[in-house]
Image (cartoon, rainbow, N blue to C red; front, top):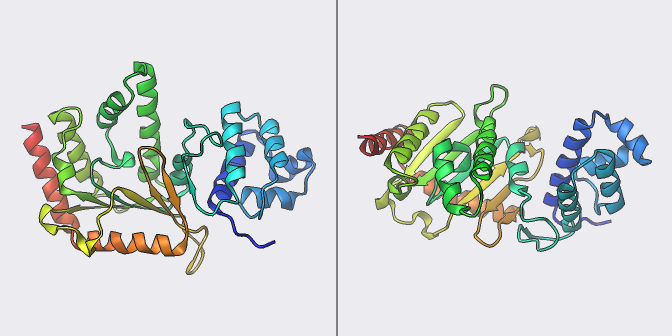
Amino acid sequence: MQDTGSTLPRRQLGRYLMDWRTRAGLSQPQAAELLGIGSSSLYRLEHGQNGKVNLSHVEAACELYDVPEVHVAAFVGLAKQANVLSWWHEFGDLIPETFDVYMGLEAAAQRFISYHVELVPGILQTADYTRALVREGHPEESPAEHERRVQMRQYRQMIVTRKRRPVTVDVVLQESLLRRIIGNAKVTGVQLKRLADVSTRPNVTVHILPHDAGIPGGHGTGQFTILEFGTSRPGKPSEPPVVYVPAYTGDMYLEKPKDVHRYHQVYKAFQDASLDAVDSRGLLRQVAKEFLT
């Protein structure tokens, strides 16, 4: 069968199922036997290699691994999305709005390339910066729910600071972002100082695109992130890269090579027009000091 659908939902579904199987303490052969399917079939399911996902296998695996109902609905939704050429996290009744598809992709990535206009990327935010955004964005929630969101974002940052194979981070930030007060001046100043400090890590590079750079390459664009997943052998990616474009009414995930290439091109234009890493760090410390004094 020719595979014409998106591989992204299948790969993401496979990652989640493998994670829940591991939590259940089952090896792949053990789980396959209990599910009544071949070990090779379960392998293909967990690695997103099926041309069409068998929904009954997904549902049976969720039952075997004792997956919570809200996640079962999300996993089934991912399975149904597997034959869609381009897909958005609007999803309607397919995937619950509360299920964060992006987080799973980010956790699996080996390289994080991102451009930001308004806000510091989540994996580099301080707890107080995140807390200010959460309170503003979810005023109807309780303080306990706010803290859960803050803790979840802080947990995500482990991919940057872990000792074994930390993710490579390469970000370009618009200079105007540095002047935007989030929470209050102190919260913003501490956040900028944190950015400067973390940019000294060998796996993190931060560039500031100054006001006078105009629109490099002539293409204006909002925030986007390119996620890369490493290579299985020289020159061959283990999984195709994904471009994530967040939006207020529904996030977009792009995986067609020509789309990914275009975002790489515009990112390079922004990067080439930015201050170098040392000058960017100096500017971050300078503006942080202005807010903190």
